[in-house]
Amino acid sequence: MAVPKRKMSRSNTRHRRSQWKATAANLVTCERCREPKLSHIACPSCGTYNRRQVLDV
Image 1 (cartoon, one colour):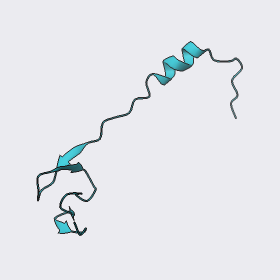
Image 2: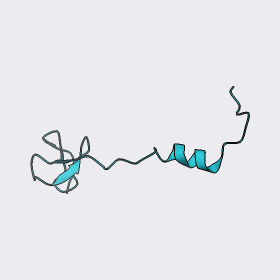
Image 3: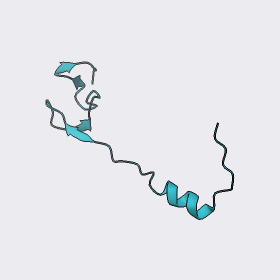
Image 4: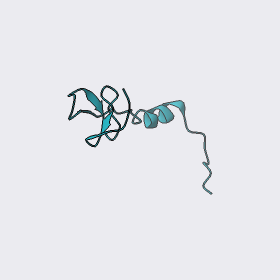
């Protein structure tokens, strides 16, 4: 297993971590109610997924 030979400075550590960015959630419109929802998730407003009713709302 690789082990660092020297301590990495705060500046280098923070410079490397500055590239770790969160991405915004990708919203799509529901085909039935036209509300924004997360893709691959059942719609929280009408309860449909893949044109089927899966939740009782």
